[in-house]
Image (cartoon, rainbow, N blue to C red; front, side, top):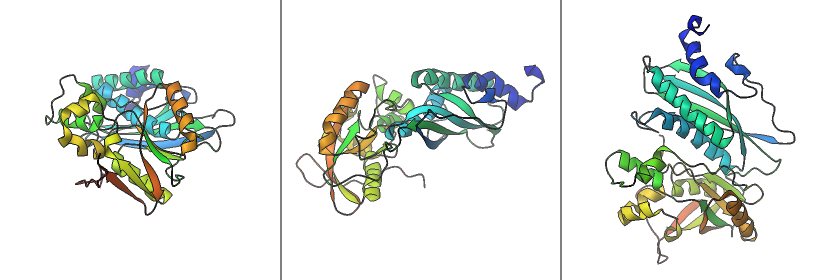
Length: 318
């Protein structure tokens, strides 16, 4: 039966139909039918990845698939949402080996098990340019429990999960500009750890994931909430590997992006609740500053409390 299918549909049957879950109609139709859990609101987010921009062309295809899914799951995690399903578009040059698709799908399959999410549908096309991938992740939250960029108040603490800078340093490793004896940094660049399961709804007053750099993404919350953020650079959590790289890489850690950690504004009265949900999810959290009244901007200070100037604010796509 598969041999009589057009090439595109044969590829879908081989590699993507096994990823389909409830509502996907076995990828036999042009749309999925999704029934959200009773009494829950849907949360939708989309991110794209392009070879040579978001991943290196020779990166392992299974890790590319996992990264594509995980950067979108990171957006859901920053909203306090539970993953439900995803739509995906895959555009590859003609002649891309079938083994590439097989490995790409295998990476997605592993993470579907890890994160409890399934494929709902999408599209496959050919392109004369580099590999271009897009994924829309769908999750659900309790009504009124969504966490947004806006909503922070003066006096809220600035909190972040995990460690900052590992992904940005990992890119430098991949480019041959930094040593990485253990492979830790390269792994963090290729394979983000989305903080799915961190129940911050009703705890954080504002938040987002850190994808374009800590300082730049904190600035987004500042502008959306109409506040000034005072960020203590010495408190920003760094891994042992990032510290070993040396202080000359601090600016890269603060602005380089690819962290996919959750950045939050948390009122002092809810700090205990944040620590509790973080313990329950086994996710480390660190307070790195505070929001104050003032124009929407970030003030960065060094260990002595002096202003710290950076050469750039973060990653920009344009």
